[in-house]
Amino acid sequence: MAMHALIPLMESDHIDKIIVVAEEEWRESIISEAAEMYTTTPFYDKISGFADPGANRQLSIFSGLKKIMAMEESLASDNMVGVALDTSTVLIHDAARPFLSAELLNHCYDALSGHDGVMPVLPVKDTLYYSEDGNSVGSLLDRGKLYAGQAPELFVLDKYYEANLNLLPERILAINGSTEPAILTGMDIVMIPGDESNFKVTTGKDLEKFIELKEREND
Image (cartoon, rainbow, N blue to C red):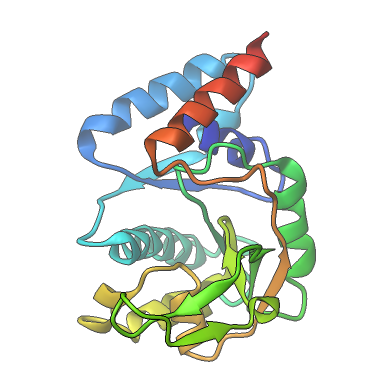
């Protein structure tokens, strides 16, 4: 499933390099599968390295960020043209979202101008209730003001790195969503319409849906 999530990133003109956060045991298969898929193109060369997973999702992201920052600073020290941390961007995507479209990816980059980050969202369809104890309804939430965030999320690199750095060592352990550090430190994050087909595979039913859709694509 990870390769399905990587394909649109490897094929996008917006993305120069990819850092994959993965355990050591998965890395060789990711590279070999990418190379096999793109035997006549240089797309797989965008996979520039790997980073170790962290204790939670956000620390895994921070591990990838540190790798990217080291690469950027190395390029800058070599006086490479066009390398500037304050204009570089980082896109965070989940391997569990295998149906990222090139259209949504392009919309993220189109919307970034004048902002510190971009997050695709979907409006909440169900009526939502708040409960203090999990047994009785405390209040009704206004779903017209509530949105479900999606990946990928796009950020100005240096600001997002600092936002995560400011949460170390303890507060970052409570982070659940990639955009939370940006919001907590006052970054300007613009919302754009998400994509219903860009669902996250987290349950057995999701996996069945993924397999069914892939079988349809191959018919």
